[in-house]
Image (tube, rainbow, N blue to C red; front, side, top):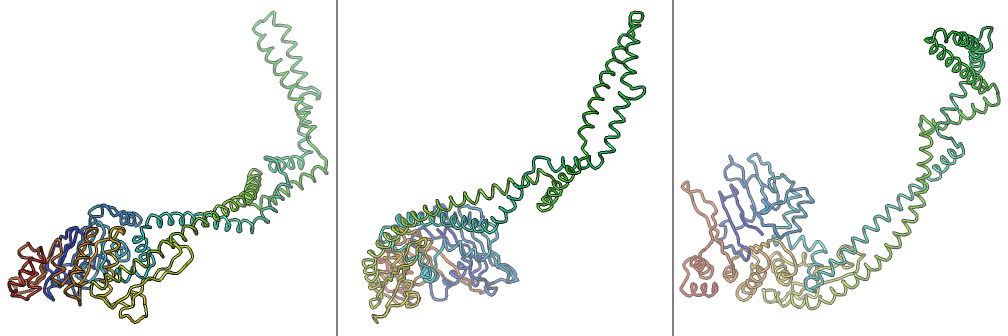
Length: 551
C-alpha cells in the first residue's frame, strides 16, 4: 500500500506530503484547488511522461516520491528480482524532472526506464482510468474475476501449473526433434567419415611409427653398413676388440697372485669384454631387422599416404587425434539412436499430460460458465444502485486453444441504454460509467483477488442521492480488503472515509498561490461535508445532515 507521497516543485505545489491510511481515504476540495494536480504528480511515479511546464521554480528540479509497503506483495517482490532490482520495504519510487527537461526514474535508488517503471508500479497502484482500459484488454483479468466469483482460483492455479509442465515437456520435445533433424542432416556424412577411419584401422602411434620405419628403409644400406662395421670391429676384424679384451683379461689374471691389487682391474676389463660381446650380438639382431624388401616399402608408403590424407581431412596432427575423431563420431551416431528413444518417451509423456490438461481446462471452463448468470445478475443489481438503471452487463465466453489461463476467451459486454446491442465494455462505457462498473466488479471480488492501491478519480460524477450512497458503501466495503483513495464531490462518499484529506489553495507572502493538503479532524470534517451539502455558509440543517453522514 501507499504509505507516503511527497511532492516537491510540481505545478502549483511547492511542497506536499500525503500519508494515507490502509482503508478508505477520501479527498475533497473546491474545483481547481489541485486535486487533479496531485494525481498528475502521482502518475509520474507510475511511468507517465514528464513535462517541464510543471516546474514552479525554474531553478530547482521537480521531485515526486512514493513510499510503498510491499511486505505482503509477493508478485511485486518477484517482479523486482526478475528485473535485477533490490527488494526493500518500504519500496521508494522516485521521479525527478531536471530544469533542462530531462527526466529520471528510480526504484530504491536504482535508475530504471519508464517502461519498467510503468510495468512495476502497475502492481502497486491502480488508477481506475488505466485499470479499466488495460485490464479489459487482457483476458487474464476477466478470468481472474470469474475464478474469484466461482471460488475456483485454486483450480485455476492447479491448471496453470499443469499447463507450464506441459509447455516445458513440449519445449524439450521440440528441442530434441530439432536436434535430431540437425543430426540426421549430418549423420550420413559422419557415418562415411567413421567408416573411413574404421576401415583404415590405425593403431596407437601407428602413423608416427610407420613414418620412422619408412625412413629407416630408405636409408637401409647405410644403416646396415654402419652396423656391420661396428660389429666387425668388435668381433670379426684382424684384431677384434672383444678378443683383445679377453686376451688382456687373461694376461692380467696370471699376475693377480703377485699383485692382488690388479684383481679389480682385471674384473672390470672382463666385465667390459662381456658387455661388448653382448653389444655385438644386439648389433647383429638390429642388422637383421633392417629390410630392403621393396614390396614392404611400397606397403608402408601406401599406409603412410593414407594416414597423411586422413590427418589433413580432419585437421589432425597425430594418430591419437584421428582415433579421438573416430571415438567422437561413434558417440554422436550412438546419440542419434539415444535421442530417438528420448523423443519417443517425451512424446508419450506429452500426450498423457495434454489429455490431463484438456480435461482440467474443460472442468475450469464449466465452472466459469456456471457463475456467469449469477455474476451478471449481481453486477446489474449493483449498477442500478450506483445510478446506471438502464445499463445491462453481460459476459461472453468462447473456446480457444489452451493458454496459461485455460481454454476460454472472456469478454465483458455492456448495453448502456437497453438497446439490445451489447458492445465491449471498454468501448460502450464512458469514463464515469467505467469507474462505477469496475467498482462494482472489484467489490464482488475484493476478498479473493489481490489488487494494489485503488485510486478512483470522481467515481461518483453525475450521480447523487441514493446512487451516491451506494457508491460510498461499495467503496467502504472494498477498503476492508484493499487501500482505496477516492477523489470525490459527493458528501455521502466523503463521509465514509476512514481518513479525509482536504485540498485547498493558500497564498504565500508573495501572493503566490500553492496547493496544500490537510487531514481533517472530526469537527473540520463535519464542516467540510456540510459545505459540500449546503455551500460555503452551510445551514444548521446541512451541518446536522453532515453529522448524520459522518456518524
